[in-house]
Image (cartoon, helix red, strand yellow):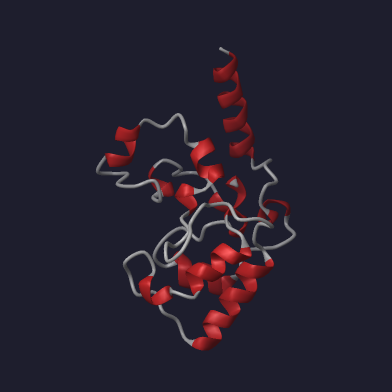
Length: 147
């Protein structure tokens, strides 16, 4: 019962946009238009605080191999993306990605903790497909404010 109450209270806070783990939620750092346009054209423009500057750098330095897709951008755009991501990132690494492995938000301690009650078969549903498809489950949630 206590766990259920915690889940319900957490859900209400998220729905109300009262979490403050990401600077976007308190107005200090609005989402960058370039980041939203470039990254958001293929997937949710994930809140920058979900990864550290080091982790974002690993991702942007290998956009030609961005999780199996060539997401390369021109030099000027890459500079803008890097400035935004590095300036609004978490202070410490959030994942355990090492070597050539790109950090994945879905493998971060935060994501694993927040989604620990999701049954493994949910990720395999045709309308979900993978943990990175946030909008499959969070359809009416402003993801910039959720983290």
